[in-house]
Length: 199
Length: 84
View 1 (cartoon, rainbow over the protein chains, first blue to last red):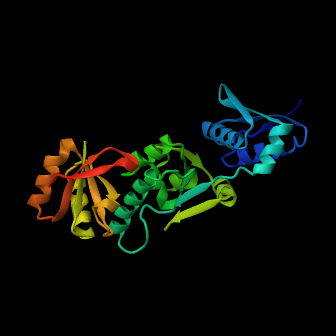
View 2: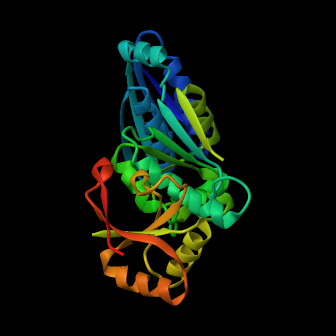
View 3: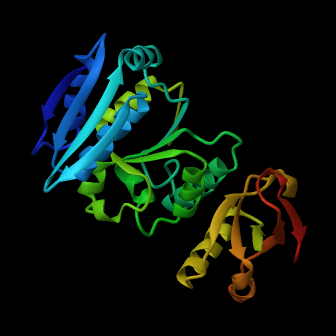
């Protein structure tokens, strides 16, 4: 089985994910293995998420400061991933900590009410994306963490823009879900069946 | 057990929400359930442990509630029993 090694040390997200994707693509059509060498846990998480989302086998190990993500993509897996295009059924995007424009107090209370209502849906959102001011919603001190946890328990994937967390200085305060990047956000929005933007 | 505070208008709901938050009283927001009326509204959920404190705060600050309900059950089977 063909094995491709990708060195992605000292690279910040989303570069390791892009490099991993490129290497997986090079395995077409026979399949094979890709080993991605990185130096941070966020990269391991994002690469694993991408690989899992496409139905590939994934594992990782750590040796000192370096981490290696092992991806196995058989010919069959590659065919299925290409056919499905990793479609997400429904995505709810949050670009602000309030809902609507006008009065911020009203906007804040409306947003809490909105997120609670999502917990009551028979089919919860498959994915929720938080960016810009929306990043405050997934971090410590947010009033909606309990509802977001309910959604996560029902299987909703919660992702927050890493650039935004960094900008507001709250990266270490992320209380739920994972960190994502603009490439992954755009890809999710582009392949989703339904995108609902809370505005 | 959780209780639901409903209000005569959104301004009262927002004032009560702020008041509870200031007093560090755990409160969660939800839309007015359909079976409690067709008015568009915001209501507040408070755990039984904080019910009396919430009730007193609202009374002391002259906030007008439309009703206070005990929430029974969960999910789609939730029912609301009038408490005050």
